[in-house]
Length: 76
Image (cartoon, rainbow, N blue to C red):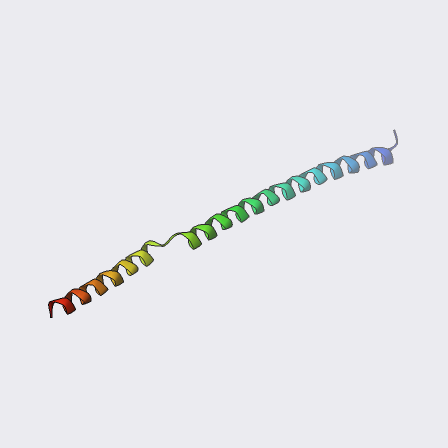
């Protein structure tokens, strides 16, 4: 075999390996992006459907304050 044929074969082999590696990188990146989208959707769902502990405590405090004011008015 001539040197140019061997060189072309070596470049072709390197190109195939580099192509495979780049493809794997894109596949892994796509998987991570999908996992990130799923996590973002879950976090958004939790934020919109559930009440945080601080918000709940604030609401309970407001309700108790209203009850205390009503009791004070009843006692007068």
